[in-house]
Amino acid sequence: MMAYIQTDTTSVPDARGYYGEFGGRFVPETLIPALDELTAAYHEAMNDPAFQQRLADLQATYTGRPTPITYAKRLSEHLGGAQIYLKREDLAHTGAHKINNALGQALLAQRMGKQRVVAETGAGQHGVASATASALLGLDCHVYMGTVDIARQQPNVFRMKLLGAEVIPVESGSKTLKDAINEAIRDWVTNVRETFYLLGSALGPHPYPMMVRDFQSVIGVEARRQIVELAGRLPDACIACVGGGSNAIGLFHAFRDDERVDLIGVEAGGHGIDGGEHAARFADPDIGRPGVLHGTRSFVMQDTDGQIVNTHSVSAGLDYASVGPEHAYLRAQERAYYTYATDEEALAAFQTLCRLEGIIPALESSHAVAEVIKRAPHMPKDSIILVNLSGRGDKDLDTVMRELKLNG
Image (tube, rainbow, N blue to C red; front, side, top):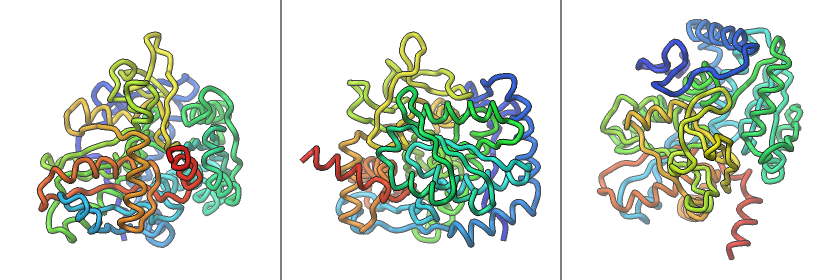
């Protein structure tokens, strides 16, 4: 059994890690040798059948891949338009797509002889996945997490600790994902010889966006085959939420050359675009424009002086000021379209999927479901939407209970 990894089918990124004008490496000189080492090790691993086989075996026997596609019959009937299919990453071990990348990178760390792993997390799912993979492989795991996110993701904090990881609270800045990444990078710079930075999304300096995309491409590879088997053809649209963008790029990658398949990413609209309390990098031209954050050039929420502005989302995993460079590239190429859902819309979608399909989605995934609810009624009944249900909502129940009480 071979791994499902799909490496790039086009010219991006180039040898310097650029996706058109986006991407690259904007890091201290001290990290360049480590990134060169990582790039060489990754390419070597991708060309090693034994590495591919080990990852494939773990995907099948540990993660539980392939995850199924579920036809959302009642939701489709309720909306009265397109037929809706859910790619069930919520059924993967640890409850989200994050395990796909965490396992791949942890195996790479082990291959490189790095015993110590550092990671960052917002919603906690990447932290849990990193702690899980580290426990499996006997690695020493340290996870940085903003204290705001710790407060709203207590179940995942406890899971990480149970799995043997050290959870390190981050009190700086907005105390969310951006600041957790800052601290993880500082740790990596300080301990670069013995430490592997297990980055959780398709961002950061090259080769991370490429590497995370490739490890997450299993989602799209499976989904493409499954939707043809179930529906007899490719979908008309693929929809996924976009924070850093790993679950979306993992789904989109297998369909990127199919021009008749619309690729739609859904950002966090927070309290609305006009007030600035959101994390929709592409939707607000006043503060969302090209810039550099965490080692890569992409769209960044920033003020007129180039200072990073605070973000807001009810979902911790989408509460981030930038987006992966390949998403910026796909938008610039007009290959993918990006929109947003507000907190209110995501919470409504969360409840709708619970009541109509018996599935409790993550709040991140609920943003994608919210776009489906907007779009499906206006599409022909024989059209097909494939939505990536990137995670399950157990971790979000405290947040949802609090929000719904506040909203009556």
